[in-house]
Image (cartoon, rainbow, N blue to C red):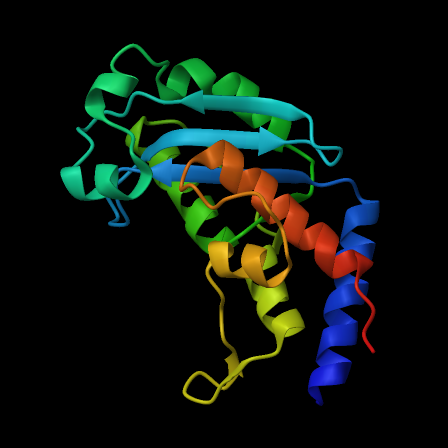
Length: 192
């Protein structure tokens, strides 16, 4: 497949996904291991309305390495709601809605880990989600011969390459809005 064909397909996929009015999601976490959990979540409606934007008090402490990335400290989450406090609202927003996420595999895995850590029984619906990172990689078209696929771009790089002025702050709200803007940029683009 030529890059032009792949780019055209990415544009068409973005356009058709936007018709379904997705919810955009981003999280920040205590880390990336199987025992880590969410400390910041944002859910944004298709029209840019913030549906939920909150810090979350985790079971475990936030390591300094994670704080250096997102700036969220243990003191900041000390009085934040816990996952069980927020779960009814989060579940209500996620259920039956298409999700658009930059690096969907990671965020969906972290939701599932956080749910399990709190002993909540629920399976994250994966069939109705779009990974904006993978779609943008196809749209951008930089080939990675080692993976035999398009090279993933960091969210901040994708935003810069698209001329979007929203910073990649490694906080859930800004990153969700930036991911939304990247998907909309793909959908508005011309393949030629």
